[in-house]
Image (cartoon, rainbow, N blue to C red; front, side):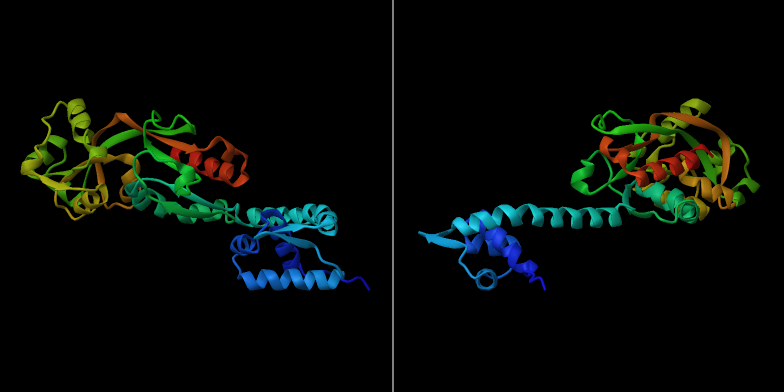
Length: 295
């Protein structure tokens, strides 16, 4: 019967051979110094001969050790590589998708069920970082950019949809006023007062030739998510991005008023590192996003 060397002894042997130090090998393997020393002694006992000799504070391979290392190291590297490939294949269905919080809350969550039906094998994790960032550093596989691609030159970017600005209000408010002018005369303007939304009312009002509401005399919120909820609660009327409120309009919580206006400052883009396009799951997610944004 063949006699097999314990795998942990082989790991310790290669680590000591490559580092020349029991201490460094133990640190690399995240085990104790004594564990490495015992593994080497056990291997040498099984082979019936020493593999190292001490030179000062270091240990180096002797002639037998060098011969053994040349045969063992490549085989052990194959085992490590095969293991990593299996782990990568298992985890490749898990993707981290980044989008702004308003899109995640009002667009993504209502569509999770449809994605699960379309691609049940995908495991999507959502992050909501804002602004430009390094996807690799942040652990993001794919991003839906709501903006322009100027700061994403190192990434593959594909336009998913134009951004349309719409005025929305609770259906109850339209019982007393049905036009944008009448609504603004009767109810407060709800404003998302943050850097990413600063042009929304301006673009929409200039198109409709209406004065821009003064935030001092109206309702301001720091995030679109808050502003949408305030609008649903009949606190006023809101100009926002159509993709943010599509589901609320479909379910009758909000009603669009007046004409939608193309937003020259922002659009929606699919973005990822070019190498991610080799991942079949990234391509599957891109296909689904294309379909959803085209509806």
